[in-house]
Image (cartoon, rainbow, N blue to C red):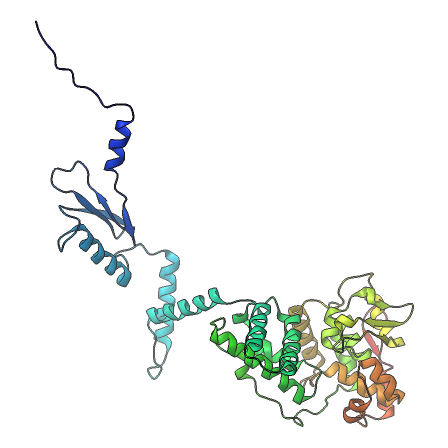
Length: 412
């Protein structure tokens, strides 16, 4: 009788357990991978690593030890950390950037210290790192105000500081803190319709806030340090002459003319004009409503529209929508109009100061003027605007009106 030896197969589920036992998790870092080499007659471990545009594999009998897979993999990873992969593919864009860098370095005189490409990349990496950790101006203000509370500074100091910072927030709250330059912050400070001492208080608040930003690495530099403090008596009131006013209006584009006319003949602050809606310009009642939320003094006021300002605004009248375009459009169009009008020197706060000076000279009513400008008293009116122009010049200013569709100017 012939007998057969039957080999019993694995029980149900045993194959899965056997397969699972053979699986070894791959150890991968910097493109270098260590895996078990099952089935190889000699090696039990293998290391896969990048070599230029290819990947190579090297076998090892042991995982640990000086000649093991782990030691070799660590050495490869160290090389990649330091130098990258050799013969790595470079894109055309990267090649053009390298050539441009070489041309810049070659054009520098010998006396200039020349940076390496690695130093340039490292500098950019630092800036990118700051930007990743940065935050909006609103967030930075909140963090700084909280720090003042923790330092237990006086309530009055905290309140005045926060009030000044919130005013800056109203214009730049959504900006990333590291994007605020000395030019942006300087324009904002010098655009404030305050005395020099008050502007210096605003500067101090911003300076300390950005110092806090440096401390928490939200910014790389403090932009306020490049802005000089003002002397109290360093800025005299400057105004446009009637002829300059007429020339400016005649060269203004339609985009900015309503805003310029309101500044010249209604005296609204720049910040108030930027928030002014056409629905607040009432031609029937002949006044402009400055809402409390848009006013520096947080008080609502009605500014009368005299005949000439109504004539300037009538062709652009709308039911609603902002009167002033974006800041970038306003600045560029105003610069173009100034150059075309031949105005070489642009006085600080020229529109509002011109309005106040010619208003006081022509109508001789300081209390009414103070109300129109949003001042609580006539003190500033008499200190800054009295006797700057004659009554004859004042009357001439208020006769500047448009003639027809083309902005031909009628001026006495």
